[in-house]
Length: 307
Ligand code: MN
Image (cartoon, rainbow, N blue to C red; front, side):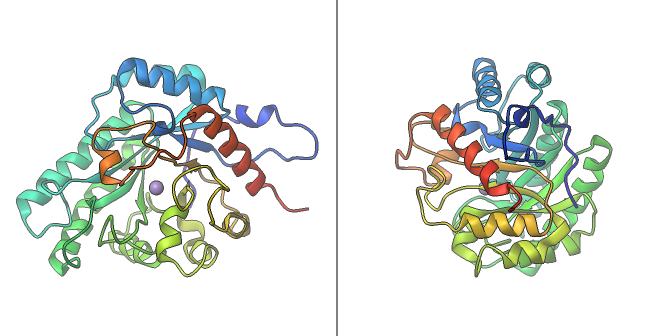
């Protein structure tokens, strides 16, 4: 399954010569440019996203953002930029909890996030929708898992008329105890049993948990709906040790046409809670525009069909 996005192909229009335009919508995380969602910051992020040649802008809803929904939707539309939203849950609002009150607050947070996604014209809500973000103190319980399945099944029903697809992002063991591998995500998606719930792979997390960068992609196949491209240290693509050739090759192998979003973090751009929860302590870059342009070219080259 691929995600239905309304992203334009304008980013590929300027490409000439031997390169074939990339078919996937290519996205960038807003934290490459700005650390908050004030009206001015959103305007700046949209403008810089368009300038760097991207089709899609991803907003983190991690800090219960309070952006101007109508203005954001209008800005995105004016610039021909699609939107995706991502988040993890919180310890006191966690659908994987055994405590029904904590689960209910998690469900409220997810519903609010779904509505925000729809209100800004977004077509994807993804991330750790299934648990609090952070180092779990023990394994997921059977009761906690039942709660996740029940809540996400309802959320998927609510997302359907809004035209939003839900993603289960596969995250590493230090950030969740629910979904650490592609296989975990497939099992959870099977239990939820909704065709608008897809798997979201992220190379940063895959590096920690998977055997390699190819087999999880093939195992997920047409249930892959969203991709995060990030280096092992979350800095400039190609400056770390990840085998992106293997990963992009696998995406081509399954003929993936969904969004591919560049995710990178630096202490140069800080978001209140998210930067701390993601353990962003180092300054890996300070020029988001240069970083974004380099990443766009890197992703384009990776997705090029081989001759
Ligand atoms: Mn990610």
